[in-house]
Amino acid sequence: MDEVVFIYATAPDLGVARKIARAVVENRAAACVNIIPGVKSVYRWKGRIEEADEIALIVKTTAQTAPKARDLIAANHPYDTPAVAALSVDERLSSNAFCAWIRAASAPAQPETDS
Image 1 (tube, rainbow, N blue to C red):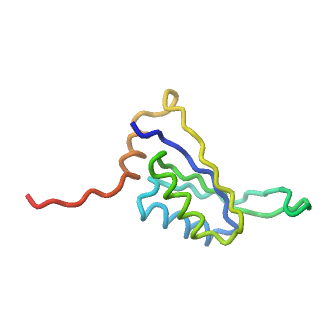
Image 2: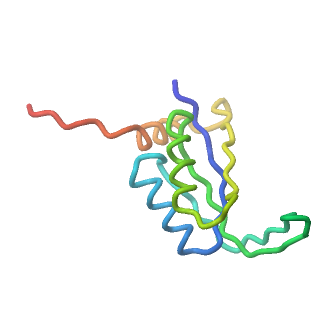
Image 3: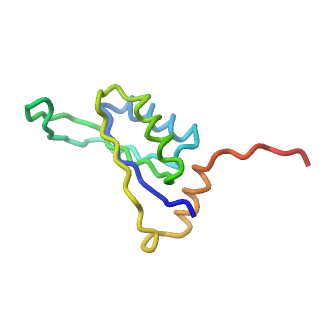
């Protein structure tokens, strides 16, 4: 069974976050993307401490489709080094129906057959 994973990523603004979310879901690289505005990031970059307002993304996908999701995030992201980290989901403590939905909604589309 394909492992469910969440990918955590950030975006600089709502427009980029929506672009990434739509690309990932439309390409069946994820079942869903949560867009969480109002994130304040404090980070070290090129030897300095920086602060930025960002949008957090939680991409709900599977281990099989996570590389495709990661690549779509990078392709639609303006940062040189976007934050993209895959996190395993402990399915023993998760909703079975929810995990099944993630697998089904992020699986490659099946070709239609004539009856």
